[in-house]
Length: 251
Image (tube, rainbow, N blue to C red; front, side):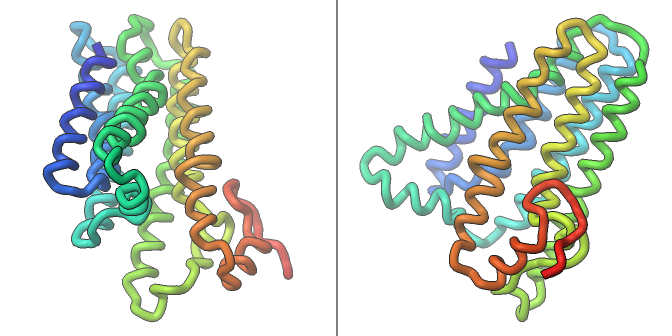
């Protein structure tokens, strides 16, 4: 059910990107895809329990904030540099490779990461457990890091004198990527909630997938490659934790 829905959704996003000639729309569509999975699984079975409401509400709050943030960040900026580069290098295979390597691949990741949400919503387990409260607290901590980190960076970049500089204050003083850390942390919180239902351990695929993507693929690794050779960033990296928040080193 969710697999077919995600396939149809990502195909529609792909067609919209073709019409707009901008594959960046897939980034805006990322959060709403999770909303679709959450709501489909929530309403699939009649009746709902507190855990269903909790996990669905957390996903909706995360997805709504992220989608609005990305939309406002990308508005008027044209296609993201990653997609623009692939548009140039893929040549005649651009449309086909875009469909599979961007849109369908993100659909697969969406399914893997959203798995605990569907698992919980389709489970008949009743009553909240300590794991639900622990998961919600972990999620709140992650939401704080992601939302505040994004806000701090946005305000920093709004000043013309900061356009070519590196953000090193606020949460960015303790981790080079507070928003990515917050993103991963929220899904570890969702996983804790899923542990309260039968087969919850299988939901470990969700936080492992998002953590791997953020650390090794599209997050930290890709962004820091962009700053290779930047002396200001090199100094910042020497004293600041890459991912997990910690006190800066003295240099």
